[in-house]
Image (tube, rainbow, N blue to C red; front, side):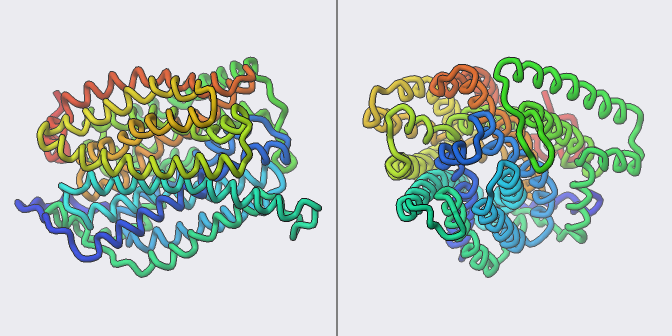
Length: 546
């Protein structure tokens, strides 16, 4: 995605089908890296009630911490780190980032204010930005094409393990610490939730050591495509960061000799973003007025912070695509001229509004609705979430591979359509359960359906691009999904909860985005194979979209 991007790959006629030595171990390490990423990211959910009391904040502010603050830096740094994953040693990149985000998680254990905890979340977001682009790219060069549905199913299961593990570890660690020091003699005056952050940071340091020793596979070998080494991966990565950071992006456009049309689009988009975000600040402030947040010596309206970050993120997306068009036109053509790829990104983003909006408040919902303790919620719901999240994708991934063979292009889309279309309907049955046992029983059925969306959707997405573009494609997806999914879902749920005083209604309301998801997936099923067949035409500049 820069001047240093490798030339187009040379296609060879054969595709390796044998699983090479070390592929299963690589899958295990990358899966555990993903699990650790979700562990450190999601632990905030189970600790939210205690954090709200100690820091004197509401649900909207928790949504900011859980989603928006994390989302901005996670999304922004996924771009240069995704580009670096396309050109540098991915095992080294993952090692460094594992160490960084684990240290940031540990810093959360020392936080005593909203600002310090926000800084911790910021650091976690930066470090975790490389996990998905580098991990996915690494595995696609270890595993043959016909087994990638299984690979993505294992990754989806690992994500579920991290989600469930964050509840179990966070809840039990915090509860144990609180019970052990009820007389106020805790070392360093640590609260239970602070101790939980410190414990959660440990697995990442262990994994970083193991990842450092993992063999780096040949890039593109499993696709029968020879990809030359990138001569300047770091230069290209820094170039991407500068190109998408507001302010520096204008210097980049000037240096690249952008024409008037490009400048007009950039500045016009910025003007529209400012107007829309200002309107959203006024609207949300009127719907749910919140006390100002103290961040250091500055006090700020939380709604202003929310929509400033979202507007910043949207402008980063615009800058990214403009920079890609100027510096790597081949990647720009491959991504922008695939309607399937664009729709897949939109579907994943909308689903993330639902998933993150509900996940961020699930533990709080259980504790409030059924009067469960933190430890009970952590153990019961954490184990159930992990178990169902692991088993579900391991069925849906191979099943989507099988269905894809019977219905090329559409098979995986059918699986995603079934799971993403039905799960919002089931959720209304789940979250109106009269008791905790009823909730858990219904949640099992809900999870079996819901866990099928990620493996087929990701497989469709990565089949639409060339091997050297998988890292930056993952970064584009993560940028859009994180800013507009993770950045909005938890905040909106918290906003509605504060405004209505009803957490259940606020959680169920986000399922409305299931309607456009179904419509988009019906279209994807009809044209995914056509767009995949036109991949080389898009790369070479031919008009392939019909």
